[in-house]
Length: 259
Image (tube, helix red, strand yellow):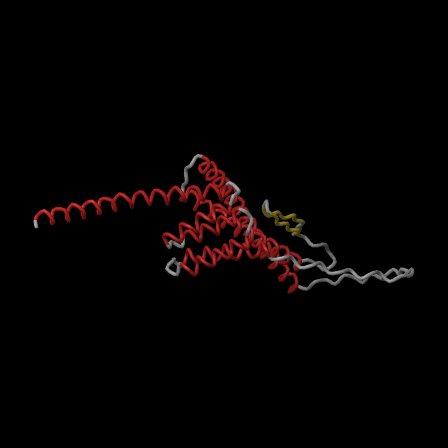
């Protein structure tokens, strides 16, 4: 009886030891596949990276791998598929905080806005044939603005300057964060080529990219608003005082202001 009990204890101890050894080995295998998936996504092989992340999610049930699939698609210009994975992440991870959920939703909104086609230009009707005899108009004497109109124009110019200051500040912040995001992306790519991965550096780059997009959007809207306000403060026969241009490199404004 004692011999049977001793054999049973020995078998149970061996089984427990095998289980303890198998857990670190499985974790190490998962870590190596995460690094391999990251390298595939950054190296222009998104399909292989997506497949590895799908395997990891199927084994662990961790929705973070679904989010990483969305990032992989986004890094390779497949925005529609990225939006699908980000929405699936929000559905599979109801326990995430409000701040993280808002960040993911903001990323979805940006990707959908980039994919939305611009409205077609209105067709210009053809000019009517036949010569037209020009008639010189008789200029009307300029109306002298009253004190109320002058005060209103003054307030509009002040509001235009304030909006322009906000626009320049926001665009500058977007430019700085965009440069920071690009630098961090290059660092992550270099680390991945050496088999090293830094989650904090990756997250910092993502936050900088989001702030850059928001900065350019707010800056562009503020500059356009400043132009409209300043145009309203001028007479109708003058050219628009502000021209705003927003593109991938930043926001620029060309001013023609007189006080």
